[in-house]
Amino acid sequence: MAIFTLSPLPFGSVGELWPQLHGILIGIALIIHVFDCWRSNQPLPAVPGILMVAAALVGMVALWGYVQAIPGLFPALQHPFWAQTATLLQQPDMPGYLSLAPQQSVQVATRYLVYLGFALLVVWHGRRQRNAELLLVIFVAAQAVYALYGLTLYFTGSDTLLWFARPSPGAVTSTFVNRNNYATFAGLGILAALMLVLRYLRRTFEEERSARTRLRELIETMTSYGWLLALTLLLLFAAILLTQSRMGLLAVMAASSVLLVSWMARLPPGAPRRLGGLLLVLLVALVAVNFVLSGGATADRLLHLLQEEDLRFAAYPLVLEAISERPWIGYGLGAFETAFRAFRDESIPFLFSRAHSDYLELVMDLGWPMAILMLSSFALLLIAAWRASRVRTEYEFALLSLAATIQIALHSALDFSMQLAAVVYAYLLVALVGLGRPGRARPRPRHRPDPAGV
Image (cartoon, rainbow, N blue to C red):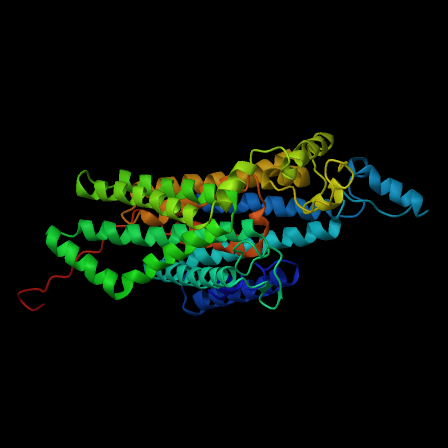
């Protein structure tokens, strides 16, 4: 809980220090959990096979990152830059690497292993429904705090972020540096909050009570504690729109629609489905109202997305050219910035540290085979979520995983939010918190007192 609630605070945990600290904390947490199971003479919780396969694929990608950083390995496959560097420095014995940035490859590969450790903790602790609910409630509460902070900075006109100068003073970024990164983070919060709302509504409709009783209980809930969740949704929708992130808004709208439509499809015909349709209309109306409140800034940026002067579209052909030169082994995990310097021309007036497309950067860094393995791990998560949503009674957790993966998949096409640790932790939490439960979840039988007193 400390990691996924506090990791957004230091600018989304950008840099190398924070992932290293997270690795230490996650390692300690894993050791404690394993020791606790051993002390209580209990086996470690089982992990569904499809999730184990997905984790194994990510582990293979991390292993490839380490292989790319081994000095002197496969000289014939090393980039010519290493031979040229050895000649210029007059050091013929200087070893070369498969990666153009071997130290960065090791760091990113280690970060992947840290993410796998966090994912394992989420799956283990999310097996219990009470834990899963608690984790999501805390996550949504943290999302509300970060959104409130970002909106406060925006409407007060503050030019500082924490105690530093804000790089994007005209948009909501909360504690993040990049508006798109925060939009992805806030979008996951919207999906989690929406899922909690849908789960409450579905449970209300399943109870055998009159419509008047249900309405009374709904009003009582909204006037006691339910308004907090509704207010959080409003804050997050306002924040994500005022980020002026084009793909951030489109991705979360698509994912929210998938979540709502999939939820409606599982409901019985009649009033429940009509309520789901009303919620979908309300979602669109809410975004329309926020469009008006934003003064058209987001609409202008959406139109700008299709214009040629967006530099990411000038960079994409150069990235594809770089991929065509080393399509099988790549330039090294995390080595995009170093490798892209050799391909940047006058159409890119400044240094590109990211490809602004996680897919293209992944292929350029790893090569096609390993990039396909990484993307296959996300495809397996989609399959696992879809299968779980069709067999489980509490299917909202699985639908949340499905929607979150769709949001990340769409936004990653034109941005690089998944290269930020805080966003990865948020995604792993909402995507895995309900997938670790084995088999079909069935409601517990109600206890009936024995008339004989036994």
